[in-house]
Length: 427
Image (tube, rainbow, N blue to C red; front, side, top):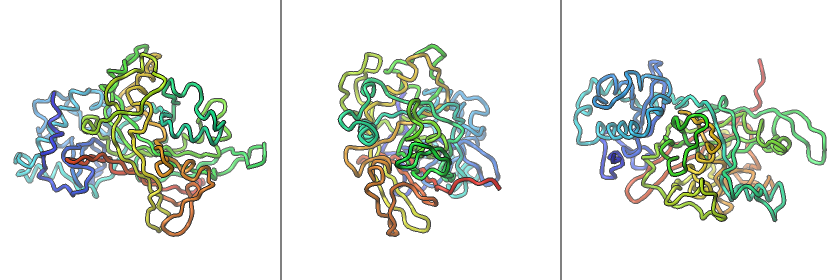
């Protein structure tokens, strides 16, 4: 089935700003709270939030086989469970409905009032009920930088890193959408020069620039997903700020890896950009040497050219750009991550989220964390207000943006924006 929604010549009767992340060729999916306190699934074109529940109720998806309440829910899980054919049919239909040459909804003021809302008048929610969350560690540059700092610089990568997409199971209960503030966590740390831990606020809070992909129901327990089929089970992608407490991490990560240093908060952008929308931006990933084992081998273009930016905004000041990176630098692809994840028969469900791991590029200005950008705090970064940052301060806001762009179209994710607050204190 062709992806007619991607036609770069298509325009919408809705106004779309020239630099918008959300032209009619994007059509992402999300969940929002309307002004009348109704939560609904939706999409976005320009600065308009579109109620998919209202579109379905008013008959605009006629001819597409859907359950009666497919879009009248507070998550996208059921829609995602319906699979790739339904995703494409719905996205193509939405593109037709809002095409500049289609008067059906354009000229129906009564229906428009029930379907279309200003993005400023809605409150974005988590788009899916995330049952399980896995975070990978798939940037060779990031893993090498961390290995140089914490282990042997001559042997920065552990022996398994070039053979498997390393990952760990995270905590879905503390994944929040953009705009929700995050509290500095408490935990055990070891002061410099000491061997005995103390308990208190983390002093080294960091961002991690990541993306994440959302899966559909992929397999039954015991079944693996072949790498060449893996993309069929990936619905789309979001931006992910996987907050990290580096001092807690340093003390706890041996022998079992990340735990409390990571699971206190992870922030995601609210719109899921579909793999269909990202199709024009495929590119080749890094050469893999040594060649992976057969179950991880793939040919063709399985990376995506997604430009990424991170800003830090001190309270009351202008944001400062601290890094620019790109998703195409990732050593292990999403297909390889999902194939490896299920290679032992692990079940993957609709709404599961898989983090990419920190996305660092080859140059110091493209590193994906403050740990790397300041090299453990040795090289502070100057902010717009003249202050310096080694890590993230209380009341700083971290803003991540991502977009793909070619000569014909720009497809973006919007942003994930989160403020760091002091430790939570019970009243």
